[in-house]
Image (cartoon, rainbow, N blue to C red; front, side, top):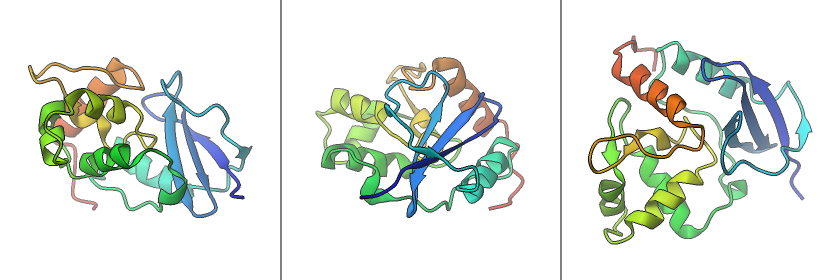
Length: 166
């Protein structure tokens, strides 16, 4: 049996809860996050220091990509959800795509609604950038952490703050 741990960090989006196992990160959740886990496990503020540092760099506009260790075995999700989450990781920093485009990219063009549902179940918000998926009309649509946070993340990435750390 794998033990689950969590820690919290301050961010411009409010408190983030980082969850994971001995093998790596399994979740990043915002306050009032839709589809969060029922329980986070045991608090251990000594864990996930690398993830906290990389998130802080991202929020400061100094990080475009994450290299944190993820426990993919413990992420859960169906095979389809994992395909969607893999597709999210391929969206470049600062870009947005529609749910339809994501469905095309994963080889399931008729599964737009299912892609949207899988996107909403992404446990690694920010690191697996579900905020980069928008409606076909270019408007912002659902986000587990709330629309204001999605808007903030997209504006951060569009602002050009990045100065080449990674």
